[in-house]
Amino acid sequence: GMAVGAGMAMQAVGRRGVQVGMGPVANYSKHEDAMLGIARQVPGARNEMGQLTEVYRQAERDVRALSGQIPIATTEIANMMTAAARMEVPKGELKEFTLLASEMATAFDAVPDQVTESMGKVAKNFKIPLTQIRGLADSINYLDDNAISKGADIIDFLNRTSGVVSTVAMSAQDAAALGSTLLTLGERTETAGTAANAIVQKFAAATKGTKKFRSALDEIGLSADAVQMGMSKDATGTLDSVIAAIGKLPEHKRIGVMVELVGMEHSDTLAKLVDKPEELARQRKLANGGEAKGSMSREAAARNATMSAQWQMTKNRAFNLGSTIGETLAPALLKLLN
Image 1 (cartoon, rainbow, N blue to C red):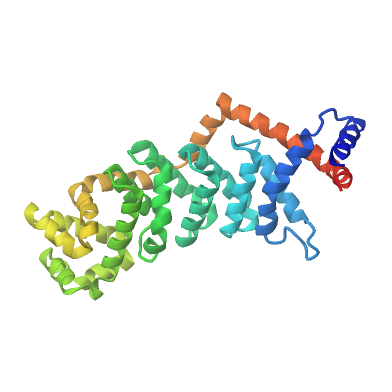
Image 2 (cartoon, helix red, strand yellow):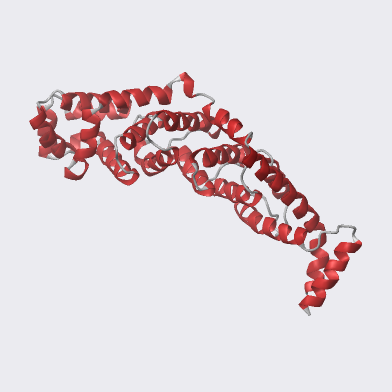
């Protein structure tokens, strides 16, 4: 039975001069399972006969190459590339996007395939070409370094808000700074995301606002038409002008106006921005400034030089070698197992 087959396979392995027993076959099996997602998600990875193609082989070479550059297991990298392909990252850009996502995963201590999916969604919503997504990653990393917010939470905030925020004239960098500011001022990711969506939507449709909403705008000296038009031309500047106008009110009048503008449940989120407009300005400067550029790859380089990162990449190379050998042994073993 099976044990005999396995025993014969062990002898077969020995006869091939590879004295490593079943290890390579087990490695290949894990590798093959992880690559199944790529075979399914990447267009052209299988031909019409269902056979794996050169497209698949190229993706496999890319996954193995990346595993020597980044301290994440080969199988995890395959899962990340699968997530990227699911987010419709084009074939030619899968490797570059996966490299960036993996740098983010290790920098922000995030779940690798989740961070890939989130960034894919953000890029899609903001219509950022993937070649330019590194700029946004740099901003997020720089905010993470210079504020009390965490990179993974900023990405989560962007993931929750990019659908709404991308409908007005606000850059992804400004949205990241807004999220980071709210997180720094003590908001939780969920409430920050929900509130930001509600605030943006209410001002973007200002002319459709309730009577109370319109009278609250009157009270701070802004017209619904101007606010609505402003959101479509320069949402960042428009939000600033609303925040500044509320800030000019005597303190006891502010809360009532904010409740009428954005509703009871989001008024305390808006209040944080009204209270600390200089923090929002500071973080926006961080996100858009020159110092942010290249911060992601600088951090990755520093981390990749550590002993633990080098050890993970060494393990990856051993795993890849084993799974390559295992692939040549697999057909003989399958025959024996059958």
